[in-house]
Figure 1: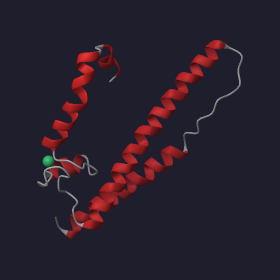
Figure 2: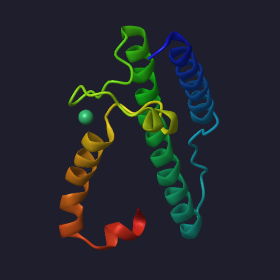
Figure 3: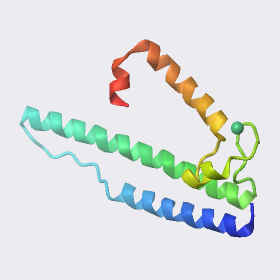
Figure 4: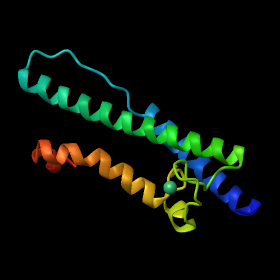
Length: 126
Ligand SMILES: [Zn+2]
């Protein structure tokens, strides 16, 4: 990877990092006191949603941070699992990708497999 390419990825990742940090700040999780059951149910689901998206943001933020560290270490663009080069097309689409497409698919399949057998209703929420 050339220095110019590295700089482009660094800029992209730093912009993503800023965006995610701002998104996390913009989502305070609050509970208002209410005596209405329906309000409480709504609030609980709002809060679950906010926590869920906060968790997703944090894990993406961690991925972006790790990608920036790989840039510093000179291992950016190398699959963390099989150590093959990650395809430039994949990096352009997902600059924070830690794995090549083959390893990523293997990891996704592993994560998906148990829930497919356990409960079909989980699929509806994906
Ligand atoms: Zn790989």
